[in-house]
Amino acid sequence: MENLKRTSALVLAAVMLLTLHLTAYAASGTGYTDVPENTWYTEAVEYVSSHGLMTGTSDTTFSPDQPTSRAMLATILYRNAGRPSVSTAAGFTDVADGTWYSDAVGWAVENEIISGYGNGLFGPDDPVTREQFAAILWRYEGRPAAVGEDFADEGSISSFASAAVDWVSANRIMNGVGENRFDPQGDATRAQTAQILMNYLAPKEDDSEDDSGAEPAGKILVAYYSATGSTQTVAETIADYLSADTFVITPVEPYTSADLNWTDNSSRVVQEHNDPANRHVALTTTEVPDFDSYDTVFIGYPIWWGGASWVVDDFVTENDFTGKTVIPFCTSSSSPLGSSGTDLAALAGTGTWLEGQRFSSSVSASTVEQWLDGLDLQ
Image (cartoon, rainbow, N blue to C red; front, top):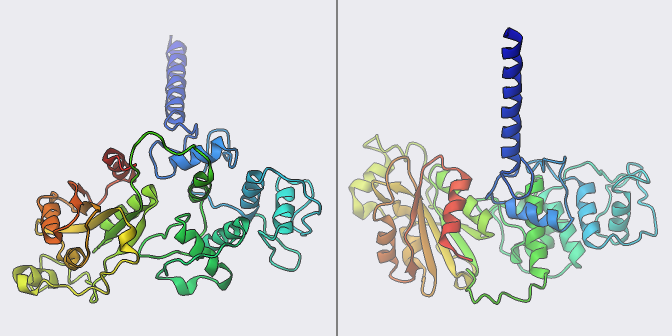
């Protein structure tokens, strides 16, 4: 009897594990257990999978956070080009003939899309940096000319990638990573690679236009002020999910941790709150490059004393939102959105302002994305 009970328990445990596995596997339409539904990269993974550009790292995993290697990116572009015949070998000591990527590397080098490091090395397993990705895609496109906005870390972008970064930025193929930074030396993950490829290739496809009659959202901007990083996290999630541009509202005199201590009556925020005439916060700039081109503007801010942080006031009053849809969002540990959105709308005096949304300081990306889906911007 004891053996029977033990056997039954083992069978039950096995069934529960199998059920959990199948539930996880079904979590995403991609078929990958590590790609949940409605992440910022789910659709992109579906796109590259359905187009035969990228496969999983196993039958059930995509490994979205794993870096993309140089060999992998060469192979992706080679597949997209239709796997043309290669007339010469890759010619690198670290690329053996007959490997899964040797033809792709040979093709990429032959077409001057990817070069080696010198000394006969290609570095097939090395991660592709974001600036390398931009340069490779730019060469693949034929080295088009473009003028892009400068990033805050523009000086860190290598000279070989400068024109390429301008091009991917101007064409909304690659976005910044927050605080108007491009992060040129950061590794491109597989999730980012999928998103970049979809951003680049999907517009090229002839979908016979959209004859549904629905109006597209157009160009989108996410403008925000973040005091502690919580609003920045939400803003970057919105920008990633909607392929939007970002603009950081920056005080000339940044707020320190001591400045933000609302429990200290001598702190900067308390003194500003207690004296409304002293709330004017000078900004480094309120001018957004090509602001007229944006159809939808998200404005993000922390809640201070039940209202929008007054740091955003000058940005709102100095810009004309006529003809734009404006969507406020805020972060706070406990305070609601309150009248902060409508107060900003009154301050602006122009634009069509939608009801805003408040997020907790520890909100998940999926929660933000679900809210965005409900806005029906597309």
